[in-house]
Length: 279
Image 1 (cartoon, helix red, strand yellow):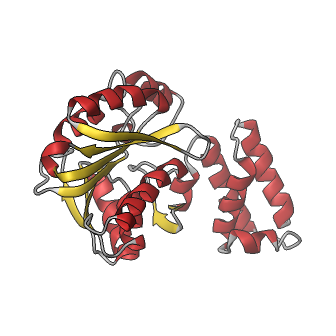
Image 2 (image 1 turned 45 degrees about the horizontal axis):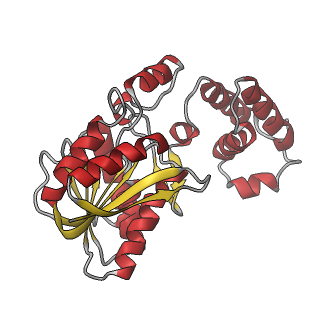
């Protein structure tokens, strides 16, 4: 089998499983099996795939068709120009979340007094690490309650940020001390029904990182309610959530004294991040 034929076979198999990114996923998995970059793979179409490479590729394609995210199969995911280690037990970084990083970096660039950042529900650490790597003047703390996230974050912190980020094992603010200039979070915000549906469909990502309660806002309400105690004067709170949740979040932030509340749109033009200033 040539590289071209193997790619087509894998892509066609994934298309039958209704996977929209069939060709991309097939390319990433074959690159992994052959130990080459995706770019080199595309320049190697006429070359032969060894029996061992082909066998491993078929196994991975089957796992992908069963619902395993590519990031779990490759143990990696690119986010904000960095390659993060990913494994089962943590949420896979998503492009929409880069909006949070962009806004935090913009705030810090425009106001040098903003120096201390807290990332709640850090998961892989993609937000905290990206912020720290792209602005080394910032002091960044990350927290998560999950032992899987604790382990994966530590690996990414060491490999990408030189271990410069402080980590706190904490359920939201329970074990967080001190105050910060910016608090950022991508918390679980699916409803319980949505989470149950995804689990029934065979989603492999952890329920803990998805389920936000009956309306998806259980943890978000706690974050908004308690954030003022952990923010310095005129500090910022930024949260990612579903577009349909933004108005409820705006009302909740206003009740907790937040001002200058804005909603930021992601690349597809959907409301994705809410940002407010402590009043």
